[in-house]
Amino acid sequence: MIEFQNVSVTYGERIHALQNLTLAIPEGQFVCLVGLTGSGKSTILKLLLREIRATQGRVIVRGRDLAAIPWKHVPDVRRNIGLIPQDIGLLPNKKVWENLAYAMRAAGHARREVRQKVPEMLERFGVLHRADAFPAELSGGEQQRVAIARALINNPAILLADEPTAHLDPETSLEIVGVLQAINTRGTTVIMATHDMVSVSDLRKRTVRLDAGKVIEDIPEEQIVA
Ligand code: ADP
Ligand code: MG
Image (tube, rainbow, N blue to C red; front, side, top):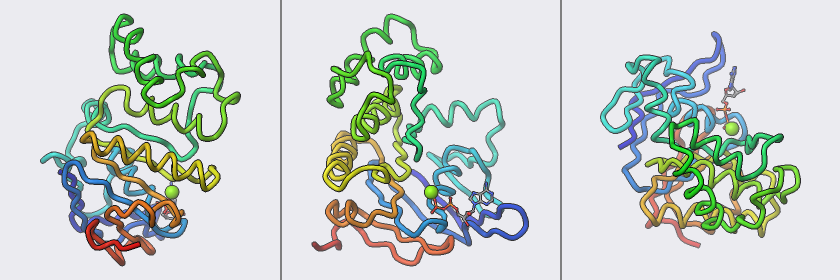
């Protein structure tokens, strides 16, 4: 469903963020992208969102070559993808429920649908009681749950999580990874970028290790032992 074929990304003239990367991710899979800071994890996510284009090679999502999609159709690509950004990215001046409503309205949903779906999603992720709070009033774990609810509110087939445990304590990290796992169980493809090996090793999902923009290890789910 997602294919990177010999993809290289060069920022400016000298920074080779990805080098001849080839990777296939079937529909419904849970993939952990691991590697040190600067190894190219976020660049992979940016390619999928068409925030950037490959300098060389092809990125194919559901049979479509992303580089060939005209600008005016890029929103269609993004509608199919939910993103949990590294900085969480909730609008600070809007309440929790407004953050979700905003995401739905931006995707063209009617107010009636928004009124129904927003509380449903907050409930599903255990933060309905925080609906009227502002993001700054939430704990890190609650903020991450709201970000997850927002990322999924338009039913994307693919969920991208960029360092979702970076600002959380170990216990809350495991909890959030568990939430992502549950989402995957319901059929969503999940790609989680992280340098936090602790939450990944317990998960035992496919783990693709990057170093300097190259895949140096790709361990399938069934081969990961505790
Ligand atoms: P990771 O997410 O694994 O930390 P990134 O994909 O963000 O890695 O970055 C890969 C490399 O590309 C790093 O060397 C980083 O400094 C560089 N890089 C990322 N974004 C840009 C950019 N917009 N301009 C220049 N260099 C960048
Ligand atoms: Mg990153």
